[in-house]
Length: 421
Image 1: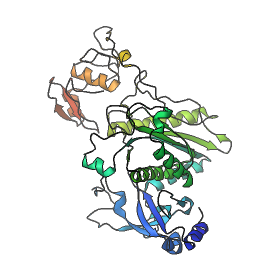
Image 2 (image 1 turned 60 degrees about the vertical axis):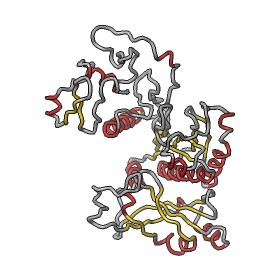
Image 3 (image 1 turned 120 degrees about the horizontal axis):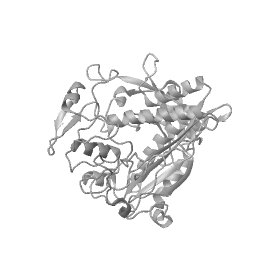
Image 4 (image 1 turned 60 degrees about the horizontal axis):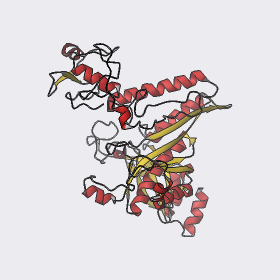
């Protein structure tokens, strides 16, 4: 939507509210509701103000210490919200309302460099210096519950009723049960200029997925944030709740698949430049590894990153878009086969668990080997002396008398018999 078009709709009374929003550190939209007349006459050109603590809060909107730009010591001041009019659009899931995303600046005009949208914009500028551009698209899986958000809160998010009671992966009759909600989300996104490709059912109870057409990375990131916010608002209006949590229960988790490609003046770069593709892929894996060590012992919500496991990641080499692909779970009987050992050392990543079944991930293999005083090939055996030399704090486990390590962003090992890969 153009500003002149919005002004016409305001004059006719068709639009009376404009949302201005920023994307915070959790990927949520935060902002204000403005009268449409005030937006077109003042804010569209001069911007508005917002509290700078919006980029220094946790998921519960509690202020967090350690930010130089925002703290109790400095006082929580404002930054300026400057609308990016290229993001101006109608939001049909709210009556007579439009939306515009904002970039952030300090009072002296300097960019708020911690803003996620401006971090991405800076990366796009670096690509442009090399004559490259980046495209992306996302696929978001989510759980739908036949509960209001308020009801779920009062139940402490336990024993929620899923929208489907069985596996509806690609099921037409199963997805029809929840089609009124999913159809409204699809059509609302189209009206909001967010092109949808398809929707489908998924494996977990009440799990669904909506896929979007690819675009340049900044536009895709904007649309991603708008969609997540909108889908939850639409679900609430229908008396239901949506969760994008990576892991909700012991069944299949919800993924965010990201398709990504680089292009230059001649077209898709990955198709023609194998070296650039491999460098890109290496960088992705390196960053994922660092993030994994900081946040969790596993790379994805399925807790697996090994060939032949429940959900190995795979990359179509040379393809214009990179995607992590999932393999369907093997039948349970195929997993629970007696373990075969070759010699006194455990097999690399496949030794027996305490119940005699094959282990299904290397992190679990390392943990069990350490608890048993054994050592996997290529893995440095931890000892109290070595841990102390590295500055790690030893943690004595409840059973087994083994030493764990807490430090360098890693979780302590659990007791033997309790560890889960």
